Length: 311
Length: 258
Image 1 (cartoon, each protein chain N blue to C red):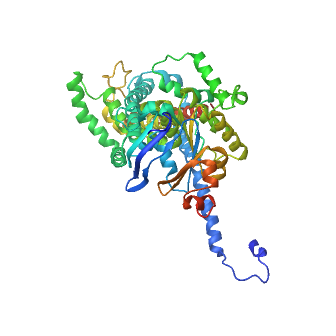
Image 2 (image 1 turned 135 degrees about the vertical axis):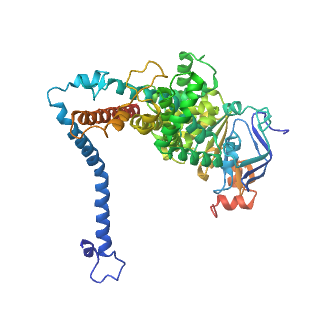
Image 3 (image 1 turned 30 degrees about the horizontal axis):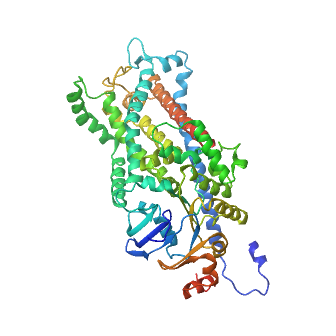
């Protein structure tokens, strides 16, 4: 070891690190570096394998990519005229997500503000634990709630013929995204230095002015991240929307129409499609589409946050 | 409160607890209007706590309990009909670490006006004028007049601290509280802030907490020496440093403890 050179010949005995500790540290460093890089590898690998399953259908001659993206006709098992149009599904995903966010963002951010700025220490702990509990409910249980309880409530309140629809899915997804928005949003608000609060309060702001004039601007990146993680959760959620939205392939004209989402479609049909068939490959292609949508959302978020930061 | 000026700060029987810990013990002080008064004493003696009573910012922590009377501008600030917002409008505070808000220089200065003016009644010309006046008063106008849109947190520390003083001025406070305003500044920055204090002297009552005895000596008119939550001595600064009455004061300014 090189360090030996630093010690003179007549140096007294000094504590030294044994060789295994030095090597152990290096090994640990390598492992940590690998786990950091692995994220990239996993993402690329997933994309590669999904795309590999989907790719053959793109080049089989009779598949039309424009029809796939922009047609609302989804008839994968038709006897006479098989059509694979996912536009209604994409719209279904978008509409459920949008409705869910319209409900979840105000509630989630409101709860985050309450927990971070208004509640006392004991109440804060209680609320955080309960909200984490909410996040721990499995999505199939949410779907079950949508299918049974929400279904009845919606039929009773709105008089709609079926209660499993866009509204039902939106509410269920909102309930599922709120915990994420709350916990990330609360972290973002907690990260605002207390000196900002004191500065504003000492000038004579009310609590509310403090929140919208100081905390919102100071925490906007974190709050945006909270909202986008909520969006990510909502777009990607499968089981709950499969059970709660009614699973009808159509363009919704109102919140009481049933819809089907991209995710629910894959989950419902992949088991029935013969491996290697066109249907099977188109479902994988739907996965690729989903992947591209979430990728675009994340990338936009990244640019937005960066743009905000530069300002 | 017989012989004292109406615009000063007068406390009577002020006690303050942090939970069960008694941090201020029966504090009676009369801080005169228009002077610079420094609060000195070893760490933990309660000088910052006392300062933070004067705008009631202590109260944002629920475990703080206060008892007694503080009269500011002729009114007991603990009276139930006192508006906290109005109090903080007339009693500005500068903190230990410069804490401009993460918005532009311009917005930092008009922040107080915006907060205290309901609705959208503020004319741009009025705001512009307030900004120019406040920055001129703290000697920042020349340096910053072309950078009003820059983020305040990206300025030099000294400029940030001056800006923190400047943002109080549009609200026309009577009293400015400073909690070790120079402790994160270098020699030049400290000099600049002290000069600024001298410029503001007369128009404002300035109370400054400082660890730096040399600063208290050169920059203040009167001095309050505190120890373990009690006021030990309050007199003119030269008097306190040349001829301290309390032996504890003498030992502290000689540097025997603290």
